[in-house]
Picture 1 (tube, rainbow, N blue to C red):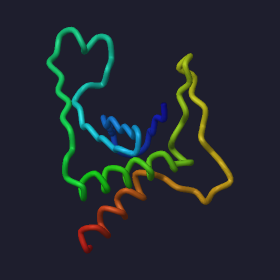
Picture 2 (cartoon, rainbow, N blue to C red):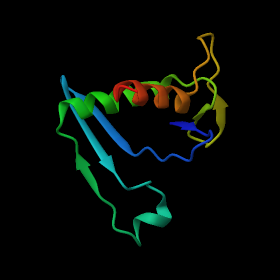
Picture 3 (cartoon, helix red, strand yellow):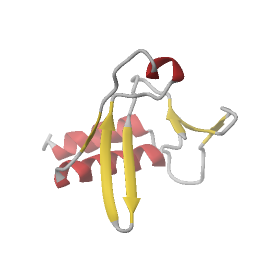
Picture 4 (cartoon, one colour):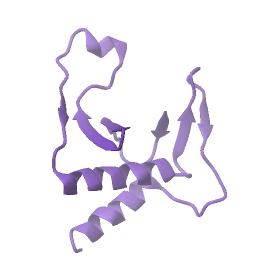
Length: 105
């Protein structure tokens, strides 16, 4: 699991499946914390719009490429920074620029 801690509090709850060449994307309210699954109603729904799917995948790829604010969370809940030899990328800033460009601003 990747966790990004930066200027904005985000809870991206996206399920992305790619099985047998077929892509499925769902958005969900659930954060899958044990304390929330028994006392709340959570919802998940499929995304059918192809342009919206592309935008969601683009944003997921930006988040996965973050090497400044992101950490890997392992099975023991240890955090390891994702620093690498690639050019620095902060997902929140890159997503802001991506959305600004996609709206023609």
